[in-house]
Amino acid sequence: SLEQTALREANEEIGLDPTNVKLFGSLAKIPVISGFELNAFVGRLLEDTELYPGDSEVQRVLFVPLEALLEEAAWRTENREWRGEEFKLHFFDHEGDVIWGATARLVDLLLKLLRERHQDVRELL
Image (cartoon, rainbow, N blue to C red; front, side):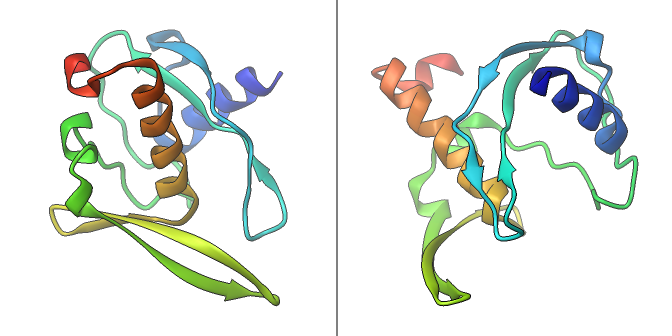
């Protein structure tokens, strides 16, 4: 299943123990520049754990508090063109790091979902 695939990939890429996460569900599928669709899952760690890059696809693991993601001043978008199509590219700045592209778009989708379900997302902190 896609859920099992996501857990396997997270284990291979960042050392996430599949038994240490409670999955809540998936976000909307998004197309990525490579032509594939990305289907990300959202979950919560059941206990603190060390996560680390496990293969060549991940350079390092960032821990960004939800509170920081809610800071609108840290977000920006830029219009880009690729293969004759224009699209909006998302960026999020946090402590000298930039989360961008598909990852930032997925985080943006997650925040929109949380805002739809909770009047004040800060209540979740």
